Length: 335
Image (cartoon, rainbow, N blue to C red; front, side):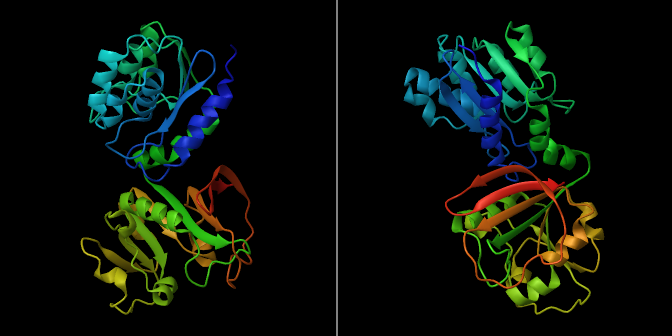
């Protein structure tokens, strides 16, 4: 059967984008496993640092689908899953094709080598999107090739590189993204806009951010906490961008433990951080656009506000678009 390689890699990409902003300091990675007859056995992603890599999650799900062996579903530790698959696969992966947005890791770190696992399961073919430029982790494709598996690299490389870019930037210098929520009429004022699941996603991103940047007027008007309470996570440090340095210290964000709150009239302080989220509206957008890498917009299906991004003229390239229980979620870069 002819396999539509772009279709299956796109499935892996879409799954991985669900976890963009959640896997720091690891990259967001997606993986799809496809049977010889073209049936989809698994579509999985790396979900957070320390959790199993995308390939391991996908092989685990595919193994269960092929064998109905429910024991593996109880395994959450990556090393345990590796061991179980190696001991029990019984050649069930013969003829299977694997699609992964990033070259399988070659090294043994917090988790075992994905390349080593793939090389021992008897898969037929491996499609890879982006090559791993990380010196320690690279070389996985060659390990799989050496085991006699057909490997095709650079499939949808542009799209996979866009997915990988936040990780690469955070490794090289820093990654900065600008997040906002708006209604269908473009308004960003007037209280809570996003759905509960969208707010929970943002809190999960805050949990892994080093720094959160916000404008002084927003702090004074909204009196936010800016923590990660919806996911029981840690609160990032906060930079309040403001010419006026006086603030009511009873505003909740000032009383969150184990965080540093800085007040400054420039972005100089961000130089000491790697993974930075900026939250704001029109003014903050204009002030930060020269160094923001990606944009994350939540569009809520409602109207009713008054203040938006009026006067801003900008074009974006949509990198990924998805929907939660209510909102449309778009990752973008300036076009």
